[in-house]
Length: 538
Image (cartoon, rainbow, N blue to C red):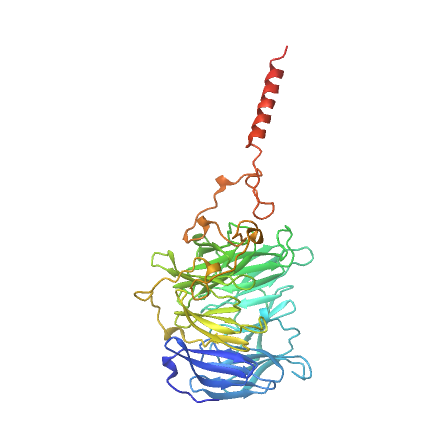
């Protein structure tokens, strides 16, 4: 590993991992600079403050002190699948393969105290699910740890993990998540079983005066059908939680990809509801603002809508418009927001600036084609998008974008497995507004521009190759839905049950209303004459 080349406190860093290992690079002048550290690793995980770096190798996990770029400790855990740092980075949770090449004694889930390098807890973990990791969780202050077992949630005191044990009985519990903040809460999910609806329950944490089983009434309970899996999204202050539920089967037959829902629960149990979404379709993503006063939901069939809701009563407050979006990223201070469409979408990105009055203004747009990940820098001024393997094996690399959509740097790699920012302490940087003289980078015609915004020539495409309209797209929003603005209820006055108001035909088709046209008017006159003749009969 290379030695440090400068004062780390003055620079941000990124880490990229390729076929030859991981490299930690400094940021110089807003661009990727020199390599300050190189590590042999198949996976890399930072602590929440970026102070420690865990590198997973075949037979060991190495812990590095990033302030000194030196090896702090080596933990002999062969066949490691995943690791996780506790909130204050005092403990490391390790999951190994439960076979001969991993944890030979069968106890493949372990907790290690990093100050001493001693294993303080171990147990058997039957299965590993990346979405549910870490299966053993710590509270933010490391006062409580918990894990799910059959029909119970076990709570531990981290200073004495083995003897002190409290058990909360929850029948058929599947997953739980501790809230951040000073007064942690526990939210638990019980799936739909034996004809009974699934539910989410909210609990206070127990005290450790006496061990054994304890009974506790939930602070809040929310029941729902057609939910097989949930993802919990806590606000950073732990004041409320969003429950993103999903099912592989859509009972309404509107989607091949199942259905999803979004629910809101306050941590004190005083209020809960289903998030009022005004468009049918899946919930693509929901994300809390770092200011904890609002959250954004991207939802609906394409073109998807993006709406901002308040954190107190879950009321729609502002809308960012509609478009080919399925991803939302807040910068660390809640000032800038990036709406993007990755995966099977073309990679369009729109950047917003949050004003003091709560309104949002578009400050730029760009296109990051084939991107797999997107992440804001710790200072909140740059966004990094990356194209990585094995998701995509061509055009690997990463791009740095300014907060207004300006492309700062494009780094190409033959093979790239991951690229991410090194986290930093929240007090290391301050929130800053848009720089004076900043120019809006707006790419209005994505199809005729490259990623830097310059015009490019495109081959001629006949109208029939684009559904007859020349620019038809199911993800293209109507002109009145594109821009941001104060939340407006859908215009129910324009809805109609007639063929004119329906859109169930082929894309691009238009139905003629039976009440219009010469033939319809002629037939109407004939019927009226026949009725008049009948009524005037003898």
